[in-house]
Amino acid sequence: MNNFLQSFWKNNGKEKLFCIHHRVKYADTDRMDMVYHGSYIHMLESARVETLREIGWVYSKMEEAGILLPVIDLKIKYKKPGRYDQILRIETHVLKPPTSRIDFHFKIMHEEDLLVEAQVTLAFIDSNGKPRRAPDGLARDLEKNALIHS
Image (cartoon, rainbow, N blue to C red):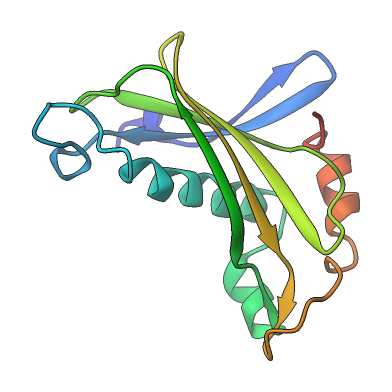
């Protein structure tokens, strides 16, 4: 495996971002030789799942505990197209401490070019679909890892 494709932390002074890489597959592109707009949603999901995993919050463990996280809002701004076989860097942080919701912010970069900026809001619900508060300790772990910033 190419070590360049592994996840890593990026430090912006006192704030940190968690980053993953994604090599654009042929299946990610459209007839115009650009990353299809819907393909970015899968990249955002991978980035947020891996960010939480990195700080000890594994989706499958949360689901086993009856904590579900449906997406309730998604905003994407497309700045420049990604292309087949490029290695994209997806930078992730959280905008504020989680309550009954958690807001992730993402930048998808190719080298130094900003391709996509996105925000995804997820709600915390129990296994019956009822709203609930964020699990105890999640805000603490996000803060401890300097991942909360606007």
